[in-house]
Image (spheres, rainbow, N blue to C red):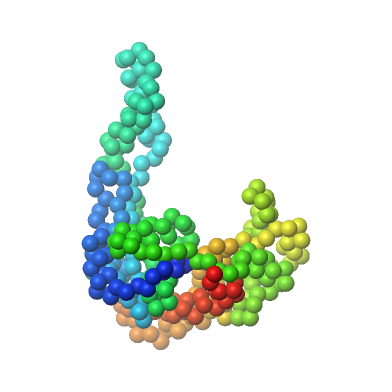
Length: 300
């Protein structure tokens, strides 16, 4: 169980539910397959897989949850083609044009007719609660993925006040300074990926990957006024990632020195491996995240 991305949300109130109470709430919103006449369905599912029954996997006070989502795949081209055929048939029979409102109603009926025959696409979204540290950590770099899990928690718990991560100093300004100086703060090292943008919304964008970030080419872009919006970093030779201007962690990797510590772990089943990886991952992040926030002046 290794997260590939990381978005942090700050819990705005102490999380006081026990594991048992939280599990009971999740059970009320457990995943049910998408009905034939619905376009989507979402609910909680066991993080350890379908053979498991527990909706929470807890290690060292950190609670892993998993949201399963199913969506009907209904290509717009199919809907549009069917709509065009029905509109043409009606206009031939009527001898007149089909109005816009009637087309919308026809489209809605076509979607209802096609949904039971549509293919279903499913996905899993993972997150863990760290009540002691006051975080919800979501394995997603997209706003949609984060909102799905946070929204489902609000629906499940009745209220779940969280806020995006905010720091005192501008990440864009700080990361630009690191790149201009050719190095990262103590404990961190520059990676081989970055993204630079010009100040205005319509400005140019430069994306680099697999490149020496201290080279003259990138320095030229900085002198031209571009700022760093994503920067590859590594921490203590243990974790590598790409950090963006919103402090979303992308391409999260736990390096060999971390993974090698699992070799001495007695893992005689996939569940035991999952448990060991989750414990190791969250332990590393508990050390990394406070240090990362310090680099930007702490939380605002």
